[in-house]
Image 1: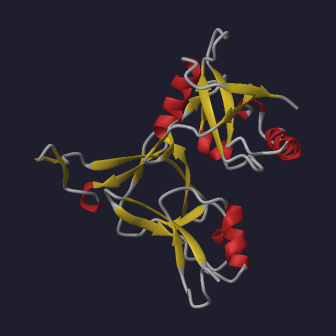
Image 2: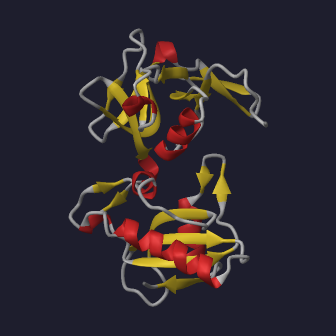
Image 3: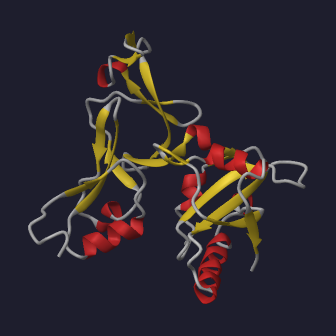
Length: 239
């Protein structure tokens, strides 16, 4: 009743949308497609295929043919200057953007069909125990958090530990019952078991309340700092 019956085309953008959400909405008859763009560059691509394997997956479509993009050695998507902003005003002073390519800070993958997949944010990447780059967003998308309100994979040095560790933080508002929490934790640990050994968190923490956020969503750096300084209290969850 909220959406109505006359919607013909929906585009999801501004953040990651889970494949399950796309599957449910498309299954209900709403034509929803995932796209990708930035405030500084506009819309870059939209998944327009009617095939469910593309519409209900992580694809944001093929980058428009007139956008001569590049991908850096780190895997960051770079957009050419002629498809990005001219500059930005800071304290009333215009600062012209002079670089040849605009750095999106998004780690991406182009699949065999030419479709763009967003892996995560470059500044959120965790360096794994074997030196590999691990995207917390990509791992979070594969974890069923159950009834927990928020989840975040971070790399931090908790009090009493000697080095930084990969930690999964789960948040709830304190209203979850014992059965609901136990069921949700079971879903979380079952999901963790499907991850590779280098992707699995060393600890799972439960935070009552909400995590610090910025305009992009959960602020992982602030969350790590607050846990390290014991400004936030979280208890360890076990199987």
